[in-house]
Every structure is written in C-alpha cells, then in structure tokens.
Image: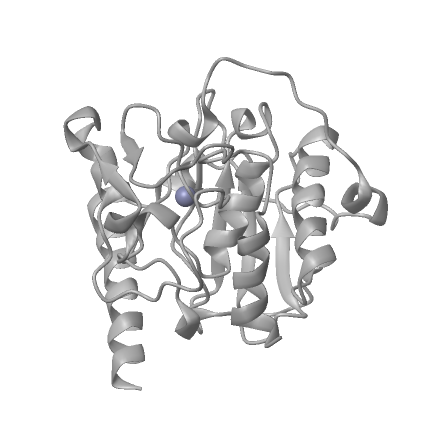
Length: 262
Ligand SMILES: [Zn+2]
C-alpha cells in the first residue's frame, strides 16, 4: 500500500509541477471545450485508410511521462469493462473513425470496454489540439483515483499515417509506458543517446524497479522504431521493430494479464 501511495503521490506531484511551471498546455491548445456524441457502432467498426508518408509518426509523437515504469498494475482502471470517455466535439468523421477503430481493437481482443461517460468523475478525456504539427500524447499513465479527466490529446496530424498512434496513446492511459524503457531492455537494445535530442532522452531511459510484464516485445505498439536512436542486441530478422499498425500479440496478452486475469 505504501508503495502504491508513493507512486500515486509522485505522479500527482509531477502533474502539479508541470501545471505550476507551464500551465496546462493541453488545455491551452484544445480546439474546443465541448464534447461530441459518443462513438457510434459504425464508427467503432469503421476501417480507416491512410496515406503513406516518409515521416515517422512514432518519432514525432510526444508522450508525457510521470514515472519511469513500463507497466503500472497498481494504476489500472478499476472496471475494465467500463472505462468511461468523453470525446472532443471537433474531431472530423475520419478522425473519429481512427479513434473508434483503435477502441474496437481493445474491445475485440480484451475485456476492456471504452464506454460513453455517464456522470463518472474519473474518465478519459479525448481532446483535439488546435495545432498544425504532431502532438499526440497521454498526459500521464494509467488511472489515478479522483483525478477527474485523464487526458489523451491528438493534433490532426496524429491521424494521417497509420492507426497505431491512437492505440498507443490509449495504452498509455490504460497503464503502460514504452517498451524500450523496461528494466530488462539492455538485454535487447542499445540506446544511442548522442543521436537523441535532449528533450527526448527521457523517453529512452531505463526504468529501474518497474514492472515488466511477459517477455520483451520488439513489435509492441509501445516500442519506438530504431532509426538511428537504438540498435538491437538480438537477431530481429523478420521482426518489424516499432511497427505502426496496432496492438501486437504480446500487447494483447499483457493487457489481458493486467486486466482480464486469463
Ligand atoms: Zn508514448
């Protein structure tokens, strides 16, 4: 209990620190302060299409971290079959399709269900950011009892390449951080810090004392691509490191292990 409380206090403190220092950037950049209708069955079942691009979305999304752990079993949502959400009113039909498609993957493969908010005080708040560049983030990881809006923020560019970004940010909100931060990651990758801008290095720091569920997964939706920032220590022939399509088999197993007890 003490460990859990220390973790929660640490996360709350970090959130407060960010807001004291810079205000709440997500709130400032929100396109709207209104919420739209919940995603319909058609939107949950839609299949988005994407234009191929030279840019690498996983290197351009920013995940705001409040701890150095990979998985947070102590911060899981208390009712996985009823994770309430509100969604910004200004998402386009296509953007709603991408978010719906991401949610449906969780519904299809786990016991987790994202459901329209019905007065719950703690909920996932899906915001649209009024900026032109990439900014896709989860303002924290997992569930914090009594903290109200658990925000996930998307700028329009987050929806342009492949569906993994929406799944990635939702997985942060469900209590997972990046695969390349696991405490055992040094057995699997070498991080090349000199190639990483200083403000991005926290996304590559090892997570001492964290919970690493199941085996290391190069193909996790939570693993960044290698580019020139990491190299592997294992034979990964035939394995796409840092893929952008969606939940891997191990992602699904980890979600089920944490939430569904199977
Ligand atoms: Zn992330």
